[in-house]
Image (cartoon, rainbow, N blue to C red; front, side):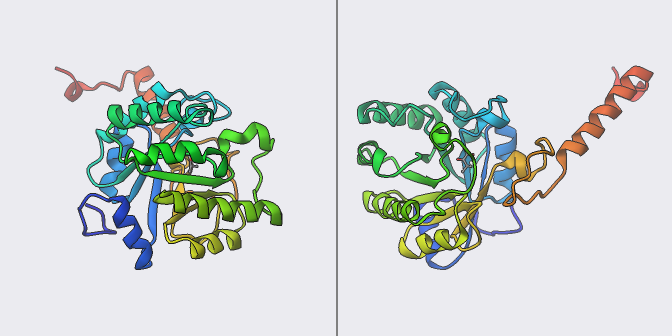
Amino acid sequence: MSVHSEDTRKVTTHRLYEMKQRGEKISMLTAYDYTMANILDQAGIDVLLVGDSAANVMAGYVTTLPMTLDQMIYHGASVMRGVSRALVAVDMPFGSYQGNSKEAFAAAVRIMKETGADCLKLEGGAEILESVNRILSAGIPIMGHLGLTPQSINKFGTYTVRAKEEAEANKLIEDAILLEQAGCFAIVLEKIPAALAERVANIVKIPIIGIGAGGGTDGQVLVVHDMLGMNSKNFSPRFLRKYADLRNIMTGAVENYIRDVKSGDFPNEKEQY
Ligand code: KIV
């Protein structure tokens, strides 16, 4: 078990709420497969997000829009098989909940039944409230996501910081209150000014998890490939802290393997039957 917590009990939405109340920060990372999920869970991470950022880091797409419901279910079920403690949230993919709340409900039920995940994450505020209400009415916990919402990248046209202007900041606050009142158990705030994120975290009672939203939130989330330094060196937004340089380590290991195969050094006598 982790050095960070002696508590091996399953993390629940209620326990996240208690963490906020006692001022304990919530740690969250993305995961998309069994092995990585197992490593992160054993290290003691509180929340794992099966993010639709799988589109970028697992499938090599430029945006998150191509992810399908079946693909999210595949990733969600893989992660669930590796986890015993962390709360696992699965992103609802683009197009599965924005149009029609009945379809949103059917997609939500499929994810919950076929992955065994604990909860779902949906991007947006007032405009998706009908779907949020319908899914919540079935007892499925929802994590909201406001600020930079990557599924709307074609509307924004850029990945720069959101809600710098007063009108957008006010709408974000209203949306956060709306999501809390609807019954969402937490909200991710992505790439917004730190002062605004801290304000929202003080206004609502549910946990606010930030990514590029400063230190005043109740927890932090990063894409695991980014924080482990697996992505191309060109991707280094200001908010990203790299905790390892796995890309270099892995490249070195593979280069050594290639050299050993080419030279006939691998396998040696002890490595064969
Ligand atoms: O899909 C994702 O990885 C996310 C995080 C950036 C919060 O939504």
